Image 1 (cartoon, rainbow, N blue to C red):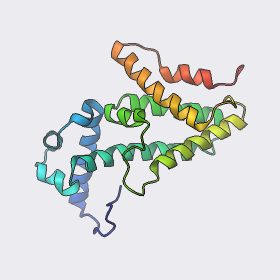
Image 2: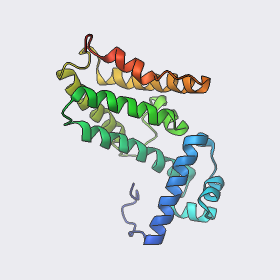
Image 3: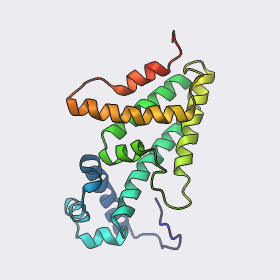
Length: 193
């Protein structure tokens, strides 16, 4: 993710490594601890002083946004890459299951996707729209191929994705082995496929 100001000089190699390390540690911390993790704890885990974290991310929200939106951007990139897959049904169902699996294992990401909000994005960001469009393309191709029921739309699938995240987290908390994405995907399949 770049600097929002657009006027920043490129980072020196050591500064880039420090920023990347902060992002890596923050991503791990958010996955396990959620949005309650402190700047001080992230700095400690990264092996830096808190000033190093603040130099790259002036607020806790800016750091969390960079981590979470970076993950959403990867989901979008994955969906775009699958948009021309040979088997549209396999591409759609695989992507759906991957999003659920990865998001359910990440407390903060799960919270963000479950909310159904506009993802607390930077002004002017198109990431929510990009996510919806990428999902829509995968869905439309899978429906044209006869793999996904024709009576569901992209908004329905996003709602199912959010519900699946809640159910998956609850199942994991109980120690359950049922993969909720499999159950939902089975319901989305055209009967007989």
